[in-house]
Image (cartoon, rainbow over all chains, first blue to last red; front, side, top):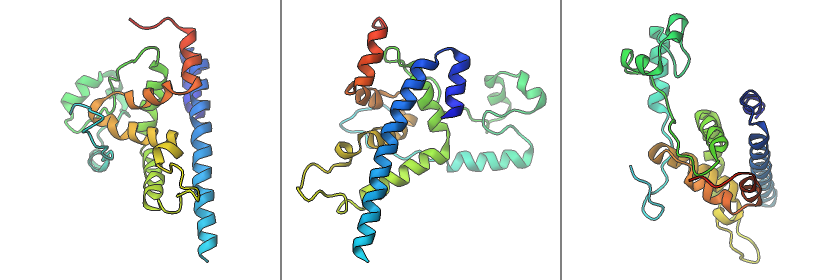
Length: 47
Length: 159
């Protein structure tokens, strides 16, 4: 992510790109966290 | 291959040939991907591709669906990171495999596209990327979000 935002710093379009990346990774992070929590819970229950 | 959301099925990007070519190029001291050595930097990508049939420039020439060039660049960069694509694919496959775990007690809509829209759209966009060279899948998803509405307000619509 840092590499990409640095790239846009050079390009001068950092605001939109940064907003886009923040939006994307925030959503993705939450979803992956939810998936890993669900899987961990299921593993606990199965033991 | 023309993209049709009704009939086109997602296919996973196959990097095996690219990895093989890169390994062979390494042995022969030929350019790997976009990395060029010494004097080869001066040549255009087209010249390089003629000189070396194994030279690959992947994922270029995306359509711009109205002020989304920055997102196209990001998508392009992300798809080029094999490990990232592989990681998202493996998470996606895990959710598909373990569907029963993700089934809600109240039996609400537990479809992956509904529960994890970002992952679903990102993986599908990346998988469609090779055949249709556009990110329309993802743009459709973005359009449902406030993010796109905020960005769109800043610009005049594209002709």
